[in-house]
Figure 1: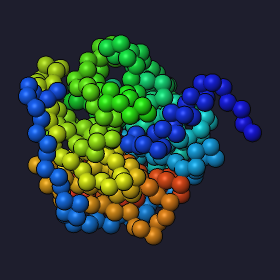
Figure 2: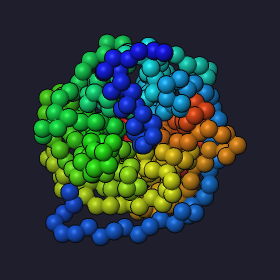
Figure 3: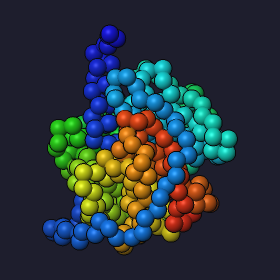
Figure 4: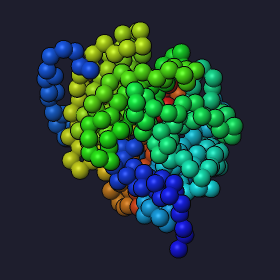
Length: 341
C-alpha cells in the first residue's frame, strides 16, 4: 500500500471534497428571490463524444476535468483536478489531430481552473488545495506563484478565475465548502499579484465566474445554493451591487463553472449530472446540453470552451468512467468569456 505524507493526505482529502462537490453585496435592503426556471424549458442539444483524456486514478474512484481554454496556438488546455503527483495535471489537446500531451505536472497542486492572461499571455491556474494562483509559460513550464497567502485574514480556496481586459484577476473563493458554511467570497487580485480585494462575501461555495459582454459585471454561481448571481462593478475596483439572477432547478446536480458567448448567453456547467444549462442574460432557459444517456459513468459536465470566433464547443465531462471531451454547436460564437476560467 502506498504511504502518504501528512501534506499528501491533506491534498487527497481536498481532492476528495472537490470530486464529491464540484469545483463544482447586494444593495441596501432585502434581496427578492428570483423566479424559478422551469426544468424542461428550452430545446435539447445532444453533445457528441470527441475523445477520452484521462483514466481514473486508483485512489479516487473517479476523475474530474476542468478549465478548458484555447491558447493562441490553437491548442485546448485542460486541467485534471484528480491527477496524482507525476500525472498529467495540465494537458494540451490538438483538436485537429485529436492528440494529447502533458504540459505540466507536479507533486502538490490540485488545479481547478485555467485561463490565459490578456496582460502577459501566461496560463494561470487556481490551486484549490494550497490557496494559490500559479502561472505557466504559454506552452507549459516556468511555473511561478502569482498569489499566495491570506485575504482579509483568511486563506482562499480558489476555484474558478476570470480576467478583465487589463489583466486583473477575479477569483471565486470557495471557503467553507467542506464545512457547509457560507464563507465563500469573490476576490479581485491586481495584475501584479500584490493587492487582493474582497468584492463579495458570505457566499455558498462560489464556483463558476465570468464577465458579461462589456466587462461591466460578473456572473458567478454558488454550488450549494444552485443559483447564479450578477455582481455589478463600479469601474473603481469595487462592487456596486449584486443580486440573484437565476435559480437553477438542478435536482441532484449543482451549479459548476460558467461561460458566456458572443450573444451574452450563459452556459452553466452541472456537477452531479452530465449536462449544461444555457440561459440568456435575462434568465430565460434557452437550451439544455445533454451527454448521451448510454454513456455510463459520466456524472459531471463542468465547463466549456467555445472556439474563438466559431461555434464549436468543447465540454469537459467526468466521472467513474474517466475524463472526456464532448462537442456540440454553441448558440453563438466563442469570445474570451467562453474560453476557460
